[in-house]
Length: 448
Image (cartoon, rainbow, N blue to C red; front, side, top):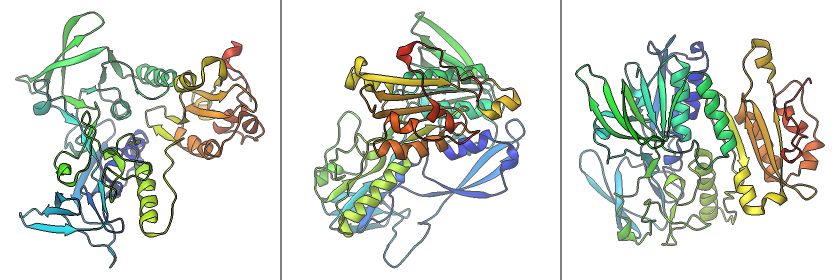
């Protein structure tokens, strides 16, 4: 999903006919470890995506043509079953293929990596009948037209960002705050930038009804919690981006004795990725308390395989996992948000260095850079351990990936300040951060 969003924001010329990529749904963490990890794994379906230029959107957009395929590569050590499986007992599953043929499979170790799917608000009349999700948006054969995106997650904002970018009338309906779980100052800057570039926001609003009009358009009724009033609007497409649900309900986990969180149906795991049954493991979106990110699930799966069959004892470290929100102005982060740092260490023990900067490419083109912002969250006591880095600007993912290594290794603010920047890059602004929020000084970068 993130790769597609990044591609769609770029010039249409970047698309080549039938360029192919692998996908596992939005963000893809759902099926990151599908296939066999030593023994075998209960997994979702892989899909191959062919991208080809279409005519919807300004100057052309993209349509995804998805075809089910098997594993991308098969060897004598991996046996692939294209079946839908559920547990019979703690060592056995029953898989059923498309023709209804059942197959019993037993193993010493079982890995659950079935992922998750976008959630529909089934309590809202018309939501399921007339709405779509991020899984569906690229399947559309025609332009989605005037679109209402319901939700404030990274998926919601990424979808709204590229739809606005290709010239579509796009509105985001948010119940509360944007990008829950992320730094809220950065999140506000993300939505401010989107709003200033044409995306509309309905804040504090919750949809209550969707119905199709004789014209074919969708009439959405919502409640404005700020004013207490009810309002309506007409759209061509309603896209739900209100979270994901794990694919665990049809696995018959109770027959194997695998415990789940009753509130969200995610599988409870320990530091070894083991469930309540020691030889059954769960990784990716189905696991409780794990980041719903593809690279995290892939890394966890590899480490699990090495522990099971490679005599390794290395556990997955879920701290300081970098990520990026691929909105029109990218937001990359690693480590703690400012709110988390203050809650953990106390305001008096946290120092935040920050800067508003102007990327060189914005200067040349005369683009507004008022939301290009960096902040580094540190412990106040010397040598000021870096707790988190937040970067809003072009190529945020590339910038954050590099600094994530240093933060993972325990970098301090003093060490960052000893690092020589590469000029002229956006990354060099990180190693030039010298103004703290506590000082009250203007953090706007001037000159070189």
